[in-house]
Image (cartoon, rainbow, N blue to C red; front, side):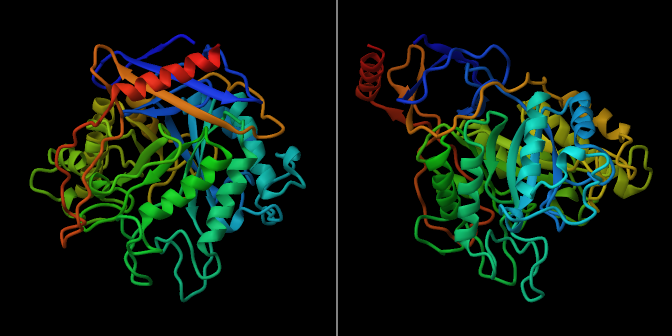
Length: 475
């Protein structure tokens, strides 16, 4: 098999050898279009099956995470119309948000949530079957999909408030969350349109439960998000090892929910199937919640780049893993003259500049207009595009993908994945995930800054063993 040269953030030439050993799945030839095949996380880049750098500029689509248990807006227009519109605007990925309680073969969209005269193909379908239809439609248009567990339930008991920051609740223990990921990962095995899974949305502290933390194995269970994410990743990778695993950060005293990746340095997450981990963060401006201290720093907005570097940007800068901005969004009061509107625009422009400078992937929040915090790409008629938002997004849109290729096998084959990652003229093989020394959590856990992380080295013997294995299988 020929070696593939891959660019990195440091513009070094790297060699990536991909070996899929399977009795049921033959080796595939190099893909012909950007984004083809399954994706890999190498250093701070996401690569397609041919080793090309993949960037996505997507949009969040809610609804499967709400009481209707189906994509928002299907009461107003046809599914195909929305997908055509997304593609025409240049969005190349959908973050498809769902609630744990909506993922069951017996769950159906609520009455009135779909106009079947506009969506005749959806009549009689279950929630999961409508999700199939969304993914099939996205596939035809070259749009990729990340499945995102947005919340446990759209309606929880009064004594256990919604969005409490946990991936389980009184009626849905962690086992339900894990079973759902097993179901979805199995369901979409071999469907290359689904490129990854976002395990849970914005884990955070809440007065209703002990603090959620990111710590060493066996500490603060079951509220340790790091070990919970590892359990969910294990479930997904056992049945569908091709998927990227997106893991959100923590909350903190000086950041939005999901945006704190500082603890990653002290307690890195390692997956059983390597080269699949991507960290995810969310970021918003003052109009979502006014008074956040970093948005009122005397140096604002010049303080933001350093703030983001220290909070989560270092993970990409030091090539620990890629970082995806899973949510950013705004009502975008373009032309507003009040102080808050002006501050909001300064935040938007600063984050857009940061995205361009770091060449980051992102998904805008949200597609539909029914977010009270940000509104949507569409206006209240679910048809007209908010042109002011698209003008802001234009400079950070990434190239479109071609239609995803390949059919879903009838049975998921058992196979192993071997990746050899070697810089040219290097004395060893550099692993893209840095080895960080574990340290005890102090009182400043939520604010401590990670020191510089150095890449670890794998002995040449490991490289030789990998090459011998590759040659033996090819022979």
